Length: 111
Image (cartoon, rainbow, N blue to C red; front, side, top):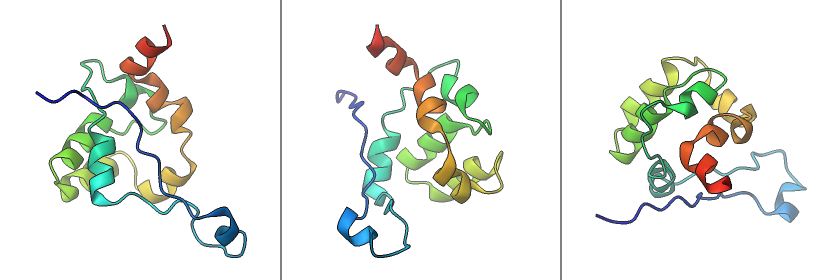
């Protein structure tokens, strides 16, 4: 079995000189391959601390599983089951202080 890669896939962003002259999105979004790689960081904890840490209680393991399997309709369903506006919430979510910080591997790493 391949070793689990827990390194974050950085979100592609507009270059600062380009974005200083427009009002377009700064974050360019993940490609399908990048999204699958980022979703593969999930280690499927039994107690699901990421879901508990999510302000709208999205079932993150279900979402990441669907992404890893390439099942985009199921991934969207998992997001919209608890959140009617996932596109907006994805832009304003304090995830670094909530779901992502709740991850078990992250807590172990700090010790």
